[in-house]
Length: 141
Ligand SMILES: [Zn+2]
Image (cartoon, rainbow, N blue to C red; front, side, top):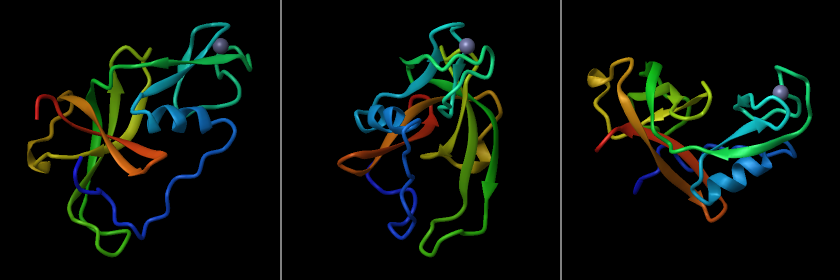
């Protein structure tokens, strides 16, 4: 992406010990989901314990970044000065991620053309040298 989706005045996301590996992968433009090494359950956002089997053991599975729109909403009121409107918040069902969905934004899209089930692909927004945010756009844009 060439332009920032949100204005510079918005604070960046904060990482903690559980989410830091996810943010480090994102900075390398790799989208990962957390995978329990005991039962293979995948989850996002990262969490210290598997919600299925309570194991604290996990690793990271890289996914393609392709997916489809599970649901979405179109925002017409800004939450920060300088924000371009409208913008789209979407839940993306990630391909090959074991049913994991990610909440993000749809970019490079006319909000009137979005449909549930539409195929989308990942595009990274570099906020700084060590912070990249995953966004999604219609497949093939
Ligand atoms: Zn598990």
